[in-house]
Amino acid sequence: MKNLLKAKKGITLISLVITIILLIILAGIGINLSLGENGLFNKAKYAKNKYLNAQRQEEEGLNELYEELGLIGELSENTKETEAGKIVRMPNTWETILPRYVSDKDGSEVVPSKKVASVYAVSAGNGNTIPVPLGFYYVGGTIESGVVISDNKEDQNKYAGKEDVSKELKGNQFVWIPCTINEYNKIDWGKESAKWPLETNTIEYMQIEKYSGFYIGRYEAGVATLNKETNEFENSVTFNENASLYEAVTVQTGIDNWGWQNYNFTARKEGASVITGTNKTIGNITVKADSIPYYHSDYYTAVEMSERLYSKHSYVKSTLVTGTMWDMMMKYMQKQGTDVTSSNLGNYSDTTLEDCTGWYCQVDGTGNTKQWQENTTKNNKSGATYTILTTGATEQVKKNNIYDVSGNVSEWTNENSYMNNMNYGMNSIYNSYIIRGGNFRETAKAVPPCFRACDSAISNSTTIGFRAALYIK
Image (cartoon, rainbow, N blue to C red; front, side, top):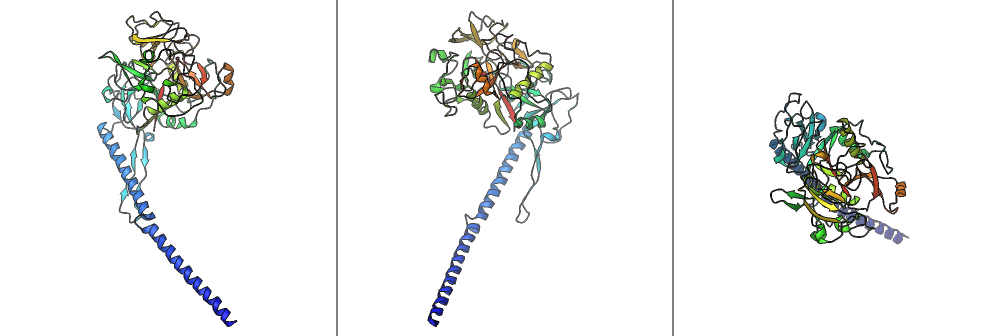
């Protein structure tokens, strides 16, 4: 019995020793993980330093932009006497406060809090202040006539204080649509061939609450722009095997029929069942005058190409126009005296447009297109059944410094349509989305600027294009 007790005590002591040794080993491993070269504390310190460096780099970059724009120092208040185009003091609501950082080790490393912004304030005349995103420049226009901004510094203040802003500019252009958060809602204009949800996506409210407005593309999205010095089009977007809409007819006959799909001109893989995929396009859309519009776009392409335009920009992102944005644009034009329920604001089949200085492409009754050619007759018909025009081809289609909000090509919006729209003959397998305005195939009376239609998301007919908008980060 004594021997058995000694054996049990021996086993217990050995187990205890082993347990202690294991605990010491585990403790050593834990200490090494925490304090070693690649330990948690060092990793945390590295992450903190990386954050601080990134914050400093961002502040240095902002300071350079602020200095370039003359934002360093005290800026004056905007008054009715302040000249249009002058940079003025920003409202406090347009600024964001970067948090103060104090090192939790000894308090010696301090990063003070600082006000920063993605915009700077510019006077639009008569005491009106607009937010201009960093990297963009005020061109001209007033709140009533339409304020235009550009992403090219050479366009800055070119038409400052003038109501009418010429299309003779170098950069991509956007127009300010002022609206309050209380009025930022969808509107039923009583002109539609589709049903749509009345709710506005709440993510849109943030920008309206902060800035009381938004920017919308001055022109339909383009794929090639005329170089007036050489009188040749320069492609900004090319497609599969370098095909372009400018040379579409010569590259492949019959690709422009509006009644069937052609995936050479969509940003998706071939196949009607594919809604996403490798983008075959190279380059970005333009928002400029004298551009061939991005016709033959399906909904997914419109979304992707709109977002791609400023995907690498630090202070804005570009999006496809939403249903509420379009309605607010219509309301803004209506306030300035335009009847958007019946007006001709574009290239329709029953409209003669005078002084057309742009180029045109003839389209026959079955949708076949001919070569793009210069409009020497200054009349958009030129003997064709239908005609597509380059963007901003005539001042006749400009309202509030915005061109072609109806006619030429209909435009996709980022607005869902109800499934019962399938009664209009669309393929019930796919989602459907709302299209706004008319196109070159319609009549001005039947399809006014406020009109809502719908189509399957995969549809990419000759008559459909799109327009981008800016969202300030």
